[in-house]
Length: 171
Image (cartoon, rainbow, N blue to C red; front, side, top):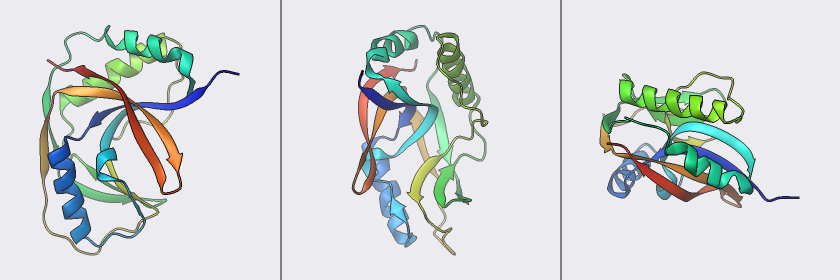
């Protein structure tokens, strides 16, 4: 039996911004299981459990994405979905983000990877099993997205942690 990995493509949050978001989140006095600052990301496509043997195929597939451009991403909405996923989201997702996600998803589908049924809702998870904070300081987090990455998800006693597998530049 071959090794399986839980895989996803995402936009990694740069370390200084991740630390800033974590400090801001601390002021909210969030409950629930907090996402570790090093693991903050915005998912593009979740692949779920995949054979580790398909990693080279996934890495080669991304080289087929042409013309994807770097862009500014502004997270300016705080929300909590049913089930307790506290998250940040863009009120106006950039066209370049939506195009990157759609093109990546299309490439994966053509290569035989299963498509996730629910629609894409870009968000950055802050905490799981949480409740929406009653009040908080105004916020707006922005960064220039100039790359995307492939990650694997590993469950440890404190919850999921993510391992960076590879990154690709946006031009």
